Length: 227
Image 1 (cartoon, rainbow, N blue to C red):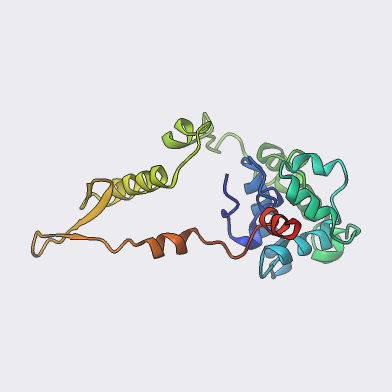
Image 2: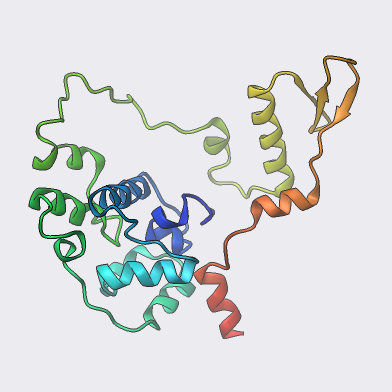
């Protein structure tokens, strides 16, 4: 799975560490970052690149414990973190401010947890005392099943090639832009005024730009260092 998901400031540690898989707990982390920002009036982890992002997280949460490393499936990322200076955890009450409701801080402490297995779930968060006045299961809509796209189910255990991914992108575009015609897995735009077919400007350069990250991930960085 890719590590280039979620805006960097709200990106969960398991994504930053290029773990093989992640789930809805990345959204719990992101929501926690937004919640902290509302309380602080400033982003809590405003990293300028992936390295600084990790440093900012560890500056507050402290260095992961040995037990926390069990959630990092990428050995290069784990080694990179182990080589960082050891930091002590800073109480979020000190970071957020003393005037903030202690229940809000307690909920935040449970949301911003490095190990996703120890991070609070959505259901648990909704049951937290801080949200007692807002939480009402009788009027809340809950999806009967976890949603996933068809191609995600079909390709869950398969290696996704660039050609196959391009094909899925074209199909997705065509679904929401029916005036675009698919031809040999390429997009052709129908111009109403002339009814002529004109190819959309999709080039290798734009594809590469869309795929580029804001920097090399921890895994790649460590690989280069070890070579």
